[in-house]
Amino acid sequence: MRLAKSKPRSSRRLVAVLVAVATTLGLVGSTIGVGDADAVPGRTYWTDSCGMPTNGAFGNKSMAPGKVKVRIWSRPGNTRTVIMLDGMRAQYDRSGWEINTNIQRLADRGVNVVEPIGGPASFYTNWDAPSNFNGQQRTYKWGCVIDRLAVNLRHGRAGVPKLATKGGKFAIMGLSSGGNAALTHAAQRRDLFYAAGSLSGYNFLTAPGMRTMLRVAMLDVAPQPWNIDSMWGAPWSPRWPQNDPFMLINRMHGLKLYVGSGNGFFGKYNYPQNMGDDLFKGTPLEMLALTQTVAFEAGARAQGLNPMTYYANGTHAWGYWQDMVWNAHRRGFFR
Image (cartoon, rainbow, N blue to C red; front, side, top):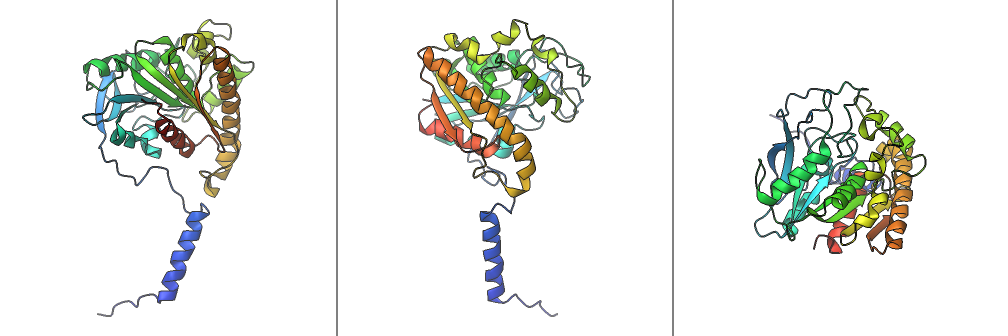
């Protein structure tokens, strides 16, 4: 049997150089966090759905009826726990945080990580009615789910383990629509949360034009559009200011706050193969998040609060949110 001749050493060197150059230029695709095996393995739990549909409108048979899937990374001896909320395009199998980042490694640094699964376009809130644009059968109750999950994690009941708290309270963070939701949950349930972080969140929802912008964004959520009118009702409904972080600043005194955003310009996590999506979605979304974050920061400081802030180059993309989480950790946000 003849063995195939090996490539000349110079050829192998050339291939290695080309791969290195391609990787440096972003020509070889990569996903943030993938390949970083978690030192603490994640565990799957199921918790009460507060009667809402856990499968959205689309009947995903892999989901347990009446339950919400939760992924948890924890270590004995950890002293803090953070609940991490996903964004508008949340999936039903895993959180985007697990798919696209390495923030689960916080569990190796004293902070347990809890990731609820599902809730695309939900804003992690209680809706007024099912979304009739996509045939949703029952009303979202994510506000109930998140707050009840925190209560159950504190006591170790209803299908989830007991996790470390700071005086009986948790930190909560989210990205994009999950960012403003994190601030809202913390402001409304001071008995459950000691810290809240919004990463590229929409923190001034009652600002002129915001409802129209959000309507357009929710029409673009795959696989079918969501009707924003089913969430908090008409623009004049009192539920809009009740769920607007900017309007809740006076209830945030004593909370540890962290808000961050990119500026919409391309940075180190914008790769050529994602150019179109980054340019036409990532850039405008992040520019909007920037204006909302700056407005919230100004409002918070005017009322005597001192939020941690993070501003950098970047678009609406996972790599930048991962950096924000680790920046918050380094600066003592979870302590």
